[in-house]
Amino acid sequence: MTATAAAGPLTPRQAERRRGILRSATALAARGGYEAVQMREVAEGARVALGTLYRYFPSKVHLLVAVMHEQLERLHEQVRRRPPTGADPAARVAEALTAAFHALQREPRLAEAMVRALSFADRSVGPEVDGVAQLTGAIVLTATRLPGPPTAEQQAALRVVVHTWHAALLAWLSGRASLAEVRADLHTAARLLSPAPAASADRPELQPVPPPAAGAVAAAG
Image (cartoon, rainbow, N blue to C red; front, side, top):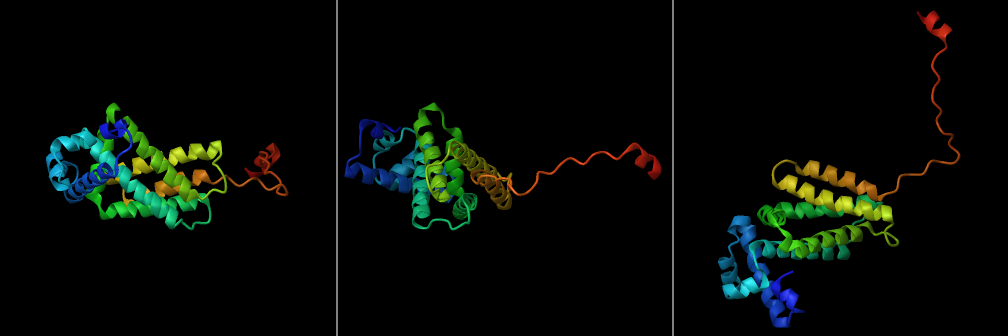
């Protein structure tokens, strides 16, 4: 939690200043990635004093995790306004997260900066990192379009999907996975959200095939 957030709700002027800081950081990250986000340059771009910037965000990691949270809020709003149309929860989640990956592909340096910040985060950034994880889970849950609250099994599946999303994003940014592999991983994880089809009552269970009789084996020889 940032120092300003810990002090209480932001005033409209403070909220606008915070948005300006995030816009400045986002622009720098989109142009040059993690290394390009220097706190002094962020402050200059947002037209605030450096000390003011540090009151809102104690470090670059805090700042870039907040940028990621803002990007995820936009994605969540897009999923709410244009829900995925897949035939089942798994297909809808895979559709939404694949679309998100395509959006990140258009801004790879920004994506790299946000994910590096997450990987560098220590305990001081814990609340902000938790917020990113919770928002990612909310996006996945919205995409499922479940008719009611998720079951315990579906909640566990949601956590697996969120973990897979973050791991796949990191693997893609580091060049260890292609977009095709990312899509395959997301589809595999998302299938956990759809219950396995129950066995048909009128379909007899398959019985094991007995071994051949000894005489038959001898005759075959």
